[in-house]
Image (cartoon, rainbow, N blue to C red; front, side, top):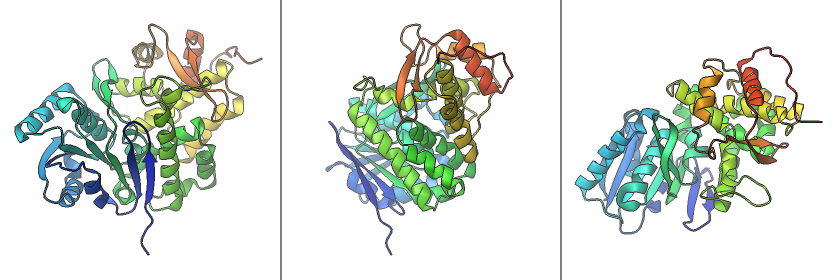
Length: 375
C-alpha cells in the first residue's frame, strides 16, 4: 500500500506547498521554476549521500554543489561570500534555483544565499531534521549569525516549495529528534494544545520516527506555523492583540542567549525548551499565567527528554545578550508570554526582579518568594 502524501498549501503573495510523507524526495524537481537550467544544491558534508539522491532526481539540470560547514558555524558572512562566488562562476541567473538539503542551519544559510543572490532566486528546502521540518524550512525567514548574536542578519524569502521526507528521520540521532520536539512543544503551548495531549498520551510514540503520532505532531506543528506566517509574514503584528509572527519566538529570547553563551554547542531545540521554562515562569511572576500551566511546561518537556534546568551562564551575561535580541525595541526587552494555554500576548519591559527570579527558577535555585502580578 502506497503511503499517503500530505500537501499543505501556504497561501499568500508567493504561494507554495509543503509536502509531508515517506519517500517523497522525488517531489523536489516539480517545485523548481519552469525554465531553470542551473540548480545549486547546498548541504553539509555529512549529508552528501542524501544530496546525491536529491541530485539524481533533478534530471538534466546543471548542478552546482555548495558544501557548507556543518551546524551553526555555517552561518557567517565568509561562508556566504564563498557561496556567492560559486554561483557567479556557474553563471547563475534569476531563473535558476537553489535547493537546500539539511537541518536548520543549512536551511537558514541556504535560504539566505538564495535571497541575496541577484536580490533573490527561487529556493526549495529539503529539511532533514525534525527541527528544520517544523521550523526553519517553513515561513521564509533566512539568517546568519554575528558576534553579537544569532540570526541578526537575514531577510524574508519564501521558498518555492518544501519537501519533508519522514524517512530521513529514521537515521536521525535520537538526541536530534528529541531536540526537534522543542519547537513542536512550543506550537502546542502557543496555538494547538492537542500537540501537548498527544505527547501526554504517547511520549514513546512521539520519539518514534516511524509512528503515526510523530507524523501527526509534524503536520500539526507545520500547520501552526503556516497559519501564523500567512497572516503576518514580516512580523508586523497580528489582530486583536495577537503577537502575530512574533508568537513563533516563544521561549527564543532566552534560548538565543543560551546558544550564544555556549558557542552554539547546545542544540537549538534544547535551548528553546529552556527558554520556555524561563518565560513561563516570567509570565507567572508578571501575573499572566496560572501556576498549573506554567508548571506544565516542565512536565511535557521532560516527558520527551528535553532539558528544563540551566545554570551554566551568569544571569548578567544572558541579560546583556537578550538586550540586543532582534525582538527588542530600543532598550526595552519584549517577550511572548501566555495569558493561558494557546493565548499568547507580548510582555514588554518586565522588571529585572522578575527576570532574575525567572532565571533562578530555570537554574533550579531555591530563592526567596517574589511577589507576582496576579491578585
